[in-house]
Image: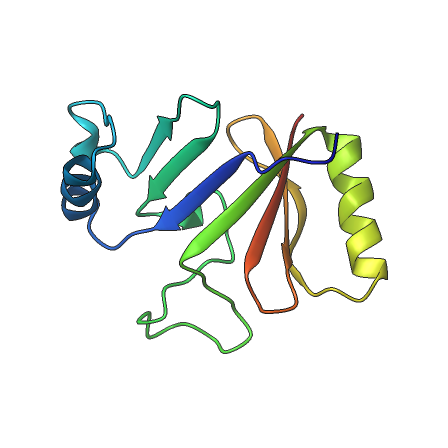
Length: 135
């Protein structure tokens, strides 16, 4: 079996407004989520959909398009496709493989403050792909 999409994340401006929309759409979102900057919604299939209003917590290079300090070289994005590779070694290997094929790095592999290992690569259309694994 091939690699499966693990999570889909949307970067949102206003968490409360976004949660209201997705609740009206029919997603089962826990009460009290409006006060959080990152909300994960597990689907029945095991897939996770998340909303995040502060991606700089897990991607230190992230800056919003309207940020006056944003440099052109710094990328931002509205969605993140996350593929869970389980281990740090697997993340590093897949990142190295993709970069060797000429795909652009969005952020080098790094440890997060919450026990994950992340690397970001842009697909040919500039969509941000998150490779994740446990430390």
